[in-house]
Length: 297
Length: 312
Image (cartoon, rainbow over all chains, first blue to last red; front, side, top):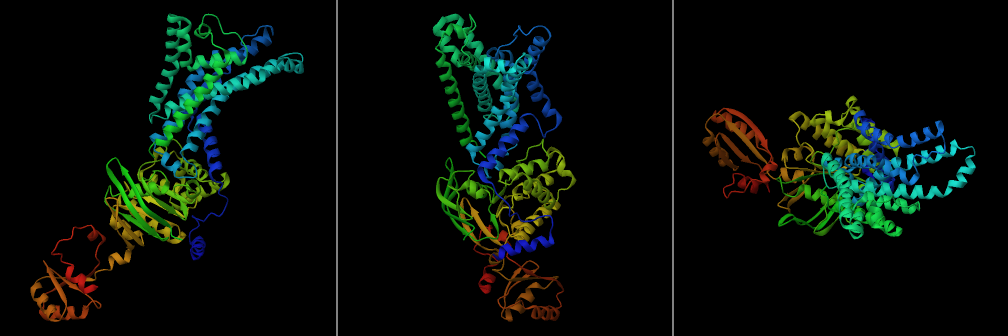
């Protein structure tokens, strides 16, 4: 008690430092704050301009096909459907990869390099909370790039028709698949980025490693699939995250896979793609949590 | 309620024992944690913060169990690590406010306290600039600010003067002392420099090779021996003889005559004797047993031994 009054007395002499008796919102609030702070920093908000250029440019790029599709439909004919919802991810896959490769190291490698983790782990959140908040921030940032253009496409087409309610009732069946696939793709691609970047403190190493995984996996899968037929494709495609994402998307939208591709050759039941997505998320989550349990701080 | 309590706290890295069954109980205050590099100071702080898992034993801080109540406890603890820990591409304001929210402060309170705390540590206009352009001294101030921004009840400082020049060192120690004394925040400050601990702390814990060597109030360490050092131009042996004759415990050390004092320093007697002998008094000073002596290997012929006995 006497200590308390000493502290109050201190106020009189030094206006620079005062005690704080306000709310302390604890762990859930700290996690939520880390999430929003990280999500902002994913797009370079609150940072110098040069940190904004790459993420914002990539984020804008994924909207280009949707904008073109809507423009063509408005100018030429609304009969032309340049991109379907299920085909859209294929058009922007390379951008999604680049975004994950650019942003994930920014999110998780940097704190290791600057050794800021000690400051986080000595506060109201624990290691798992940090890993979860950072992972969710990357996923949320990816959602801007997946759900964003899909929404633009859907809303744009609805507005372009003569009757919005008719369009909505005709196409309401697309809404849930759009949300489910956007979540699945953002999670798989984002978590791959985090899982890799969490293992290095060098941002450039992280970026290169992430790109290597995304670009080499489908290449290898394609080669195996072409040389050894259905069995080979069934072994190869699950190893390529982008193939799994595509298989899953086509299954959710209930569409036929394009002829001749590795996915088509594999000829797997639709639910297998669903199971593979869950397996990916489980394994990636485990890798990330394991890393953060052991990372020195 | 004790500030800090450890029971048989142990940590090893491979075969090296960093902390060997440390049992300690400390009351709130400004506590110095002293030991050579590698003695286990940083390990102890990290165990208390939950940054490291102990291999054995338990610890409570502010009444919270370190192992099971970490997030609640750490709302009330500030930590300034020994190493660099600041990102380069944000401003001090942005970073410290972010850290305040990581400790549970609502957004508006975080912003307000950030401004106050940065002012308290002596950062003004530069706080809006990116940290990468800061000097070492400014970075140390930001590190202290992030540890203080949520108004902790306990501050754990690991070598806060690391990398600072003498002036910066003085500023930092002054800041730490004021923070502890004027605002009643308990402080545990680890340092391998005893002089720093002496200047700032009230209580001292000495660890060596992961084991507790001594712990007690700092006055207990420094007032154990009262020795008066008398420097004369010449004739020291004669002075020694005369003073011994007067019943004092005296030791000659080059041109210095060390006088052990049990009942108050015999200034007058020495003055009169010196004048009488005409040996030319250069200076006379009260000598504390410096903290450094704690680490000096004791020799059988320790010059202070006799004086020690006299002082007890």
